[in-house]
Length: 213
Image (cartoon, rainbow, N blue to C red; front, side, top):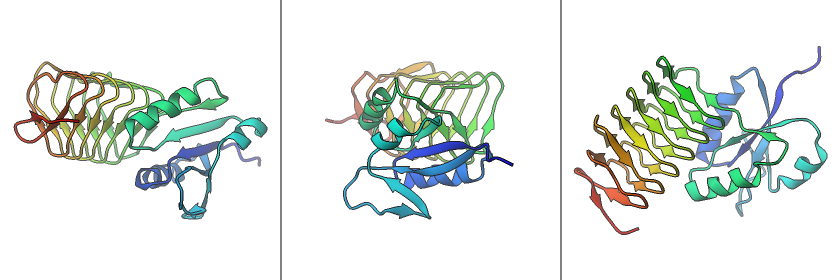
């Protein structure tokens, strides 16, 4: 019988990439062909999986459809990669680990990755290319824009609205209130947010305070 699994490439060979590979290994729909990572000094393989230094060769020569999973924790680099492959013969499926609990009317966009033991309640909308870290709790009526990263163990209260390109450090807390987190903002680990945050901000502490970027 022919192997019908889809060819999966993980963009990024760091800790996040390894987490994604562990999820894909348990998914019967995909076959991991390799990681893609151009960093200097990186290994040739991780857990027996090849690391490609360049994606151009197999993008040009391989006519088989390719499925990319974006496992890089830098928001600005992620944005460049998304634009680079937007018109290529590449698909970015969403990936939801099997222990994740999703509420009713929750939607998750393409290329988004939801890691282990996260809980996402009713009527939450998660955009494209979002990463939700391990054991994150997201309450109802939350909106998370494209290309956001939410660190593991964070708690996002109801009615919080994230714009795009936001980085949230691990263990951050957002109270339940109608508020907006402005685009391109950085929320440092363990920060507690109770109010609307203007765009291009960086915050730290409990209660949150603005600091220079």
